[in-house]
Image 1 (cartoon, rainbow, N blue to C red):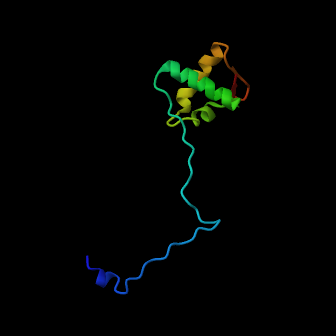
Image 2: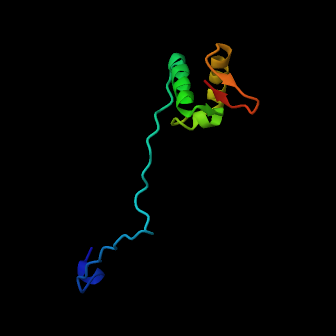
Image 3: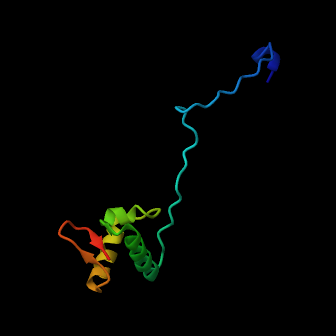
Length: 95
């Protein structure tokens, strides 16, 4: 690399100022990972349903990294069968 040919005047680029419309780094909320064992699955899904109040399996699954509605649905149905949750006519679960 030969700087005398790349930047012969030796100018330094100015930093741009951020204004209200400039998008900065995206702040992301960290989601907890979906647990690996079945007892943790059930406890975590029940806790998420408690926090949400009333939710569909998709809404509960979105509370976790790599959460899937197909995985959460049977857990919610199990909680319903055990009397720890209920389902309404719109397919939403609640405690």
